[in-house]
Image 1 (cartoon, rainbow, N blue to C red):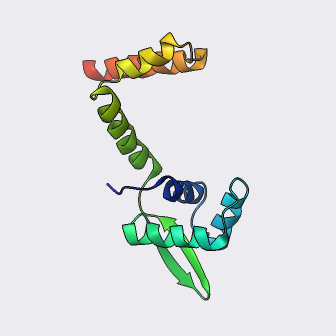
Image 2 (cartoon, one colour; image 1 turned 180 degrees about the horizontal axis):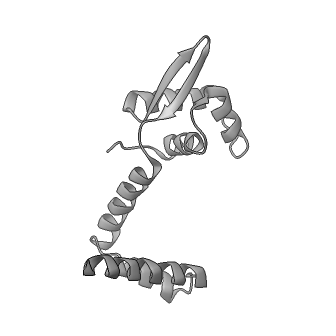
Length: 125
């Protein structure tokens, strides 16, 4: 899987919100939150293309970009790497750490219960 810097991820994340998109559309999305120069964003798009994370089609003078990797695939890979690196591959210490510091909302708890119930139901099949 492709390794991305934080800045590259932010550009790709802006593209994932709605694609295909021109460079100017991506710049506009990012400019709402970041004070990055247009050339910086275009350089990041170029790096993402070189890494194989985005593709583009040239339409006249415009470059129209699309992601080549799915957001869900990338976030799953990054989540696994994070859990492996900090928690030796175990999820329970991560969740219990949030629970002990009372940073889990009731919605988080309900979502976790549903995930566990769904997993258990799938294991029975």
